[in-house]
Length: 351
Length: 182
Figure (cartoon, rainbow over the protein chains, first blue to last red):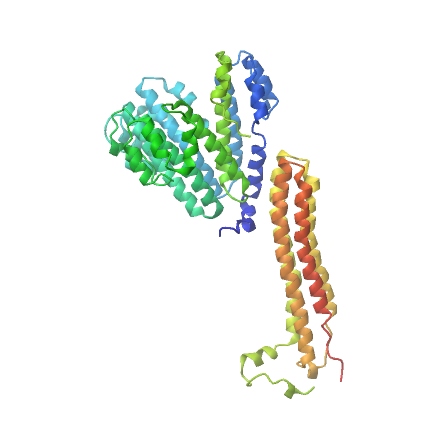
């Protein structure tokens, strides 16, 4: 019952909630980011990071350091924390934690299928996959020629199987189809996750609804902007939008017919929560939209920690950590390519 | 005191049945509730605080010794229940069987029962309250140590609830005077 979770949540979830809040206190602060932004070389970055929570993961790296190594080790820390929490969790928290990684699974599947289409080596692709989204039969994805085979040979045993019902066709895979497949899978995944959270009820349902609705709306806007000028028809575009969120259903109707960014802006400014995001951009500019969305997402994720005794803190922590890794990647790339003036273009401070 | 003084409706009404339950039954149940439900409240509070405290102490080991105060406040609730149960059981006296259903006996029985319920349920909610606050206190202290003392004040107010229950319970139990031999 909503409001009385405090009485029974701690039986199964108290320890893990305290652990995830402890992890949150280890996220990099604005002061850390300022120090990192002033580094001249990647070795400086490594030195600064060794003084933070990433110490044990980075201190043994040999000296000609690569940006991909830094990102890989930081991701490894996230994966270790996630696995620790997953093995301690009971139902329904363990299912909730698994749901968080399905997005990465979808990205990995699309990565391997696209890479195979462009004749890349499977081993090389496997190394680029996100570790949270790995599953056992992932290497056999390289064998499939069309979506039906993809489903029948590999994906029917994975948790992604129920998401395939809407997008099985017998056409051969090409770039356009793969993007549509990725978005269709992600739509099915978000709706499934939303239903699961609604079933959990209480504070988890309320906070996760807000976070997932923002995710759905953000994806709708990104799909719209990315498909302007391509051959994607309006109906196909509308089929890729999730059926929940603030923009559902009237916003989706209006977004489906948008043909340029100013029309998208006009649609979004009618919704008060999204108006400040779009008012920050001047006319015709869309590069800062990603950063504006990330900032809004980080704000909402931090707010979810204000309430106790619910599962959304786990989701929020994973997302905040991923944002931190994105920040570190951007800073490392700027430092490695000597473009330090652009470093603040894309770093989103968490605290 | 004659039995005609007990005129509660017809001879087979529920009211009459209630009056015919021995006052010792009510007393015994009261004493059981006093200790049993108090301990339930204390245990509930302790597990709520304890699980959060252990998890938070992994990242911030300094919080362990200070936050044991929350556990101690919860434990105090159980001790109140034990004390009142002991006091109540000293109030039980034997009366001759002719006096068992006398109004004064019934009054004594009801007083002990009420005292037990008061203490038991006041301690139940007090233990729950202190436990939930203690959990939040541990998590906040792990992030920012200046918050501990402030949240402790809230806990102290919470634990006063159990004390109110004990005070009223003891006053009630002073009413438990059984009839002396006539």
